[in-house]
Image 1 (cartoon, rainbow, N blue to C red):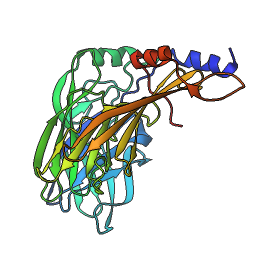
Image 2 (spheres, rainbow, N blue to C red):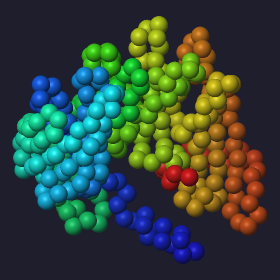
Image 3 (cartoon, helix red, strand yellow):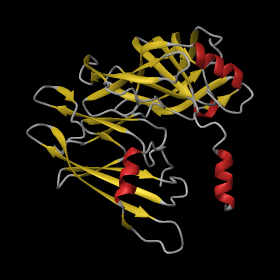
Length: 339
């Protein structure tokens, strides 16, 4: 076994699932109603996201400066016109692996809109759900005992017409799962649709929603849900497309691993990689192709092809054997690193 593979084997015994703190604070800044969605795993990764109720753009600020005990988000753009502000959180307490943070209100200052005091309406403070960590016992206890249902959490990516809030639920002894999506109009901020997901993906971060043109109509008004904190191999994706005639999002029957879209042929190809997704040795790559039927607004399975990448000095591709393809079809695979 080479040194790199040996190190990777050792690493595999250490914690694989990193959690984060998630908080929601609600109130007013100036004369505007606002909800702050805060997430992060450490002081320097603390992210604030909110909806600007003037134009319904999504504002997201990361990487604050820590000055004494205050978090400072300097000179950020808060609307479509390029206006800027600086935001200071004066009493935010991280309180990792605690059932309840110290302060029920978030006190801060906007240099443009003045002082504010927002009420905490939701929190989940588990940083590590498993693994070798000093506070492993505390985090495991929280993971085992906390439960909640259908909590809305804002997503950073949005289309030109819509923004999205995931519905998050958690059972005792389980991680947070996505149970649905609330879709809001950027014209007036009203809820226009609620989608109940047919599979409850694990929730990883505020970038779970991805935007694109997945029905080849030339408009990037469609979205997908991603189950993973990486954009590498074997990350599950679930797709939804916007049907203008119905003014709602519909299920186009497209779900699988990482997809590549061909707008000329109107084909989406999913790639599943079996084998070592870290060192990429002895891999079987199974590709499935789906054609988008424009009249039905559904994807239809049309074909698949399978390639084998053997290990060794003589690197070459070959067609899979029947057994290799069948084994890869059945295999439970893990997400890999970004290429």
